[in-house]
Image (tube, rainbow, N blue to C red; front, side, top):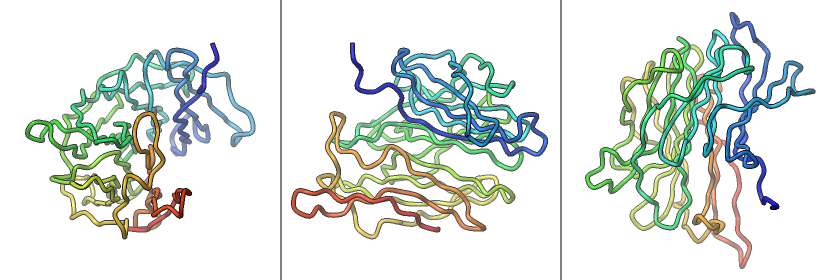
Amino acid sequence: SARSLAFDKEWLACDSGASSPHRGRCYLVYTDALRRDSLGVTSSTDGGQTWSAPVQIPVSNAVGAFPVVRPNGDLVVPFLLRGRILASSISRDGGATFGLPTTVAEMQLRATRGLRFFPLPSADVDPSGRVWVTWHDCRLSPGCAANEVFVATSDDGERWSAPRLVTRGRNAVIPAIGIHPRSGRVALAYHVVRANGGVDVELVESNPGGTSWGPPRRLSAQTMRPEWMPNTSSGRMLADYISVHYAGARPLVVWVLASEPVGPSLRQAVYATRG
């Protein structure tokens, strides 16, 4: 039968490791809806002019793959498995083969009242080669009443630390992570769902190593109302992804802003804000 969607949630990463045997190779990872929501990976060694035949990561019912490359060339792909497990798979041969998935965390989630905020992961690599993954979860909220942002780390892409709490009392969802390539300073941007249903975007930064976090800074000047966002079968949708990268010494956040509609026309735009 016809499918309305064949490939979803594409994400790209390139290998820039000075000591990597695959330096210069770029990887495109995506959900393959035609193959039971497996994860496909294709790579390019000529700047994207040509791409390899796809390789399948050995999973099904997966989405939200977020590839990162360690300095030694290992390709680590965190993803959401079966809707509630944060997992990862690793390739040590330039994307030719992938190992069986390992569990990062089993999620506990709070629904966001008519809003579409899937618990998709974001990831980055610090200067030491440690992989960081972030996601939202309600595991520490009494009665699972609110989601907060968590991180976990791995020195090899396979064995993961216990989840560590980043935000407190924010009801925060869909975080994005960026790490300064030299200092190791960590920045996290995320959506905040207010008690009245409105949504804001905030940013927090750590000291190098992420052992402590500064106060949240609000990026959205006006709280976004749910009715300003497009309606979908999964709820009002603002954005599945936002991103954080360091531009010089400061984090650059790319995020989506919904403004009040003009008549029947919705208004959403993508903005970039330097922290």
